[in-house]
Structures are given as C-alpha cells and as structure tokens.
Image (cartoon, rainbow, N blue to C red; front, side, top):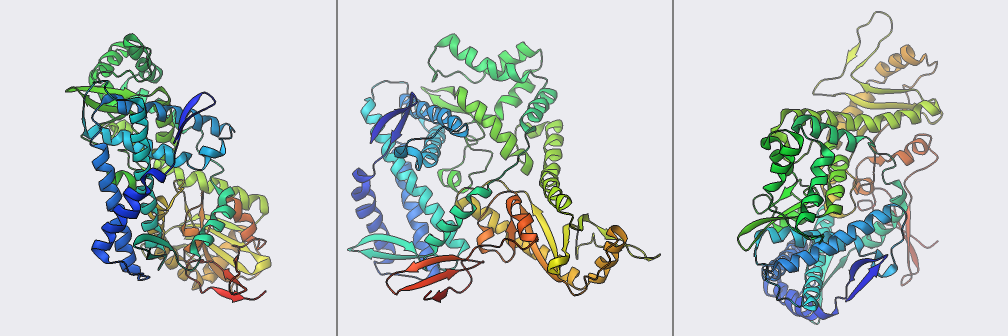
Length: 543
C-alpha cells in the first residue's frame, strides 16, 4: 500500500496481497465449503445462495474489524482522506486526469471511505491519541479490502438476479472461485463501453438554486449563512479541518443570525445529520445506495466521543451533498425526512417530482420537431373525423401514452413510454431499475396491443392533426422506452430502451443495437450476441 499525493491531495493506493490468504484462500473458502461442499455448480439457485453467503461473510468480517476501532483519531484520518477525494473528484469533473495507479479504483475507494465513516456512528469513541499512523493506514487498507469484496459480491448477486445462469461456482484446490457463464462478462463489458457515451447529456441546471430558495423560504433562513457558519464555528476552536462541534450549537447560532426560530434551524440541520439513530445497517448501506440516510446525502456525521455528541463536518462534503440532493434526490420524490415535516418543502418536492419526466419529454420533442416526424405527445384522447366523439384512452385498461411517432418511409408506428431515471453506474443500482422496468413493460404492452387494434383511430387523429394523406393501417407497431441515461434493462429487456443520443437514428432506422462478436480461438469460431443479449440464443459462425 502506498500513501501518495495527487496535486497536493493525500490518496491511498491499495494492494490486496497481505489479506488474500487470511480472508479468501482460507477464510471465505472454508466458510463456503463447510456450508455447501467444494463441488462445481452451475445451478442458478444454488449459485445465488453461495454468492449471498459470500456477501454475508465479508459483511461479518468488516463489522468485526470496524467495531474494534474505538478512537476518534482513526475516523478523523478516514475523514481527511475522504475530503481529499472530494477535491480530486471535483477536479476530475473539470477535466483533471487521475494517474493510472488510482483512476480505476477511485470510485470504489470513495465508496468504502463513506462506508467506514457511516458505520462509526454506532461506535462509542474515545479521544485518546495512542494510535500509530502506520497502524491507522494498515487498518484502512484492510477495511478497504473487505469493503471492496462486499461491493463486488453485491454486484455479482444483482447480475445473477437479472440474468438467468449468470455465474458458476468452482473450487481449485479447495480455494473458492466464481465466474461468468457463456462469456456474459465480456458481453457486458463490450456493451458498457459502447453505450458509455450515452450517459445523461442534460440535467436540471436550476435545481440547486431552487432548492436553496425553498430552504430559505420554508425555514426562514439565509442559506449562505447556514453553510458559512459551520467553518466559522470550527475556526473558533481550531484551524484543523477535522475540528468537531457539538451539534446543538448550529441551530442556536443560525437562529440568532437569521432571527428565526430554533425549530426552523433544527429542522434544517437535522436533515443533513447522520447519526446512530438514523444510519443504515452495513448491509443496507450497500444494497440501498440511494437511501436518503446515507453520508452521500447527509454530510454532518454525528459521533459519540467520550460520551459527548460531536459533529464532524467537511467543507468539501457539505457542498457536494447539497448538489447531490438537488440533482439526484428531489426529482424522484425523495428528500431528508426531517425536511418533510414542513408542508412547503413537501410541496416543493412534489413540484420537482412532477417536472422531471417533462424535462426529458421536452428534449425528446425537440428531436421530432427538428426532423418533421408526425408525432403525438401525452395522449389522453384521439380526435376523430366529422362529428364523431373523441376516443378517450386515459383509463386503467390503456392509460396516457407519452409519445406516438410515425415514420412513413419505414412503414412503422412507434409507441413510447418515457422514463427519467437516476444515473446508475453498477449492478446494484441497475437492478433497482430492472425491477421497475419489468412492471413498466406490462403497461407498455397493454398500450401497444390497444394501438395495434386501433390503428384506424390513430389514422383519423393524424388526418385531423397533421393532415396526412397516406394510410398507416398496415404499418408495424413497435413499442420502445425513451430514457435519459443508460441502465442494464437496455441490454436485456423485452423492449428496446433508447437514450437521447439514439432516438433520432433509431426512429429513422439508421442505427440499431449492435451485435456483439466474440472470438472463440479454441474452437475457431465467432460467437454473436444480439438484443436481448443475455436471453437470445448465441449465434455461432466461422466467419
């Protein structure tokens, strides 16, 4: 392990070798053999059970080690590394290139540091200074090793739940191993590379300012004072960035500064605090990464040190958390539960929740307007010719249709549901989307079937609205999803899901999901995978 500096920020790099025998070759392997034996298995259900047991093993080891860390200085050291990681992450967003030694591990590094800091809320800490710095670094490295495998097995389990027979289990000289079946791992890597450029190309730029205004209006505070008072109070005691405060002084000082009630200021700050009473268990912190009870959203860590409640607050972290709340929480009808005690904040959240699908729909509509396709948006009823009554579809059997688009040249009608999703970057998040899309499929299927049987209704509507002079009655009807950012459902869903980058080309039939080709050198053949990539039979050729 190495303690290095990148652009003057301290970062840890990691080597796993010191822990492989202890935790894998002996610990995990014996743990699994005792429960399931050491035979190779491809059975989906048994593999899933074994993967769950691996997850539980590393959860247990992480808990055992972290509960032994009872000094404030240990967690303050982790805190400082995390603050440095935020500064580097911001530089990354601005175009800074991390060195190769840390680049691929950096997201996981930041996640594990958060995990360590969160779990400290459960521990009665002491302010004693007896720890050697090298000992601190070695313990962080060991926790990183364990945390890394917790996340890895959570990802394996998520993929295995989304893909039938995703993994197999085997033992080599009684050492546990697992791997992908059917080259699915290589297929997934190829797809992630291909669609990597599709990640969200637009966002609600005004959301943070709107959130600040809502907080000011509903809690009668000055947002800049609420945030600025924290470093001011810390400096009153010390210039050290890890200086802690007793949390009760924050609402008292802000109430005086803003001439408002402590009830208001307590409600504001409590929504940003993570403590023993509201933190998630270690398991849930990994499996529910978007819960509002995570350090990602709550930048004030509340620890018990020598029996006294102390707040550890990072200047970098509080700014990051406010941005994340604005961009990755309120649009999905989520917010710190303490803020939801205020009716005005509830109204604000509901308003933003109603807006988020419309944000994406507006961008999609621009595509059809620019390319002159006849389209309908947010259809609840269809106009009919003459004096016939409009056909209402806003019923439980059909429901509002987000988009219908006609491509005359391709003899095709597209019917689409629009889904504005959180940006996901690993399988745990993908699985949340995947479960939701399975339900969305059922609704889209009903709408598609209705349209197939009612093309005459659409024909008359288009004649009334667009004055088309051709028949669509023999056109193929295809159902698709329009989405803002990639997710695993794209690769394995019943219907194709198209990001903004792909909609125009797909509608005009100049682009389609790629065929993934893998060379099987052993058998001198080519394996071809097509959408849905993990359900369709693999095509074998010798080309």
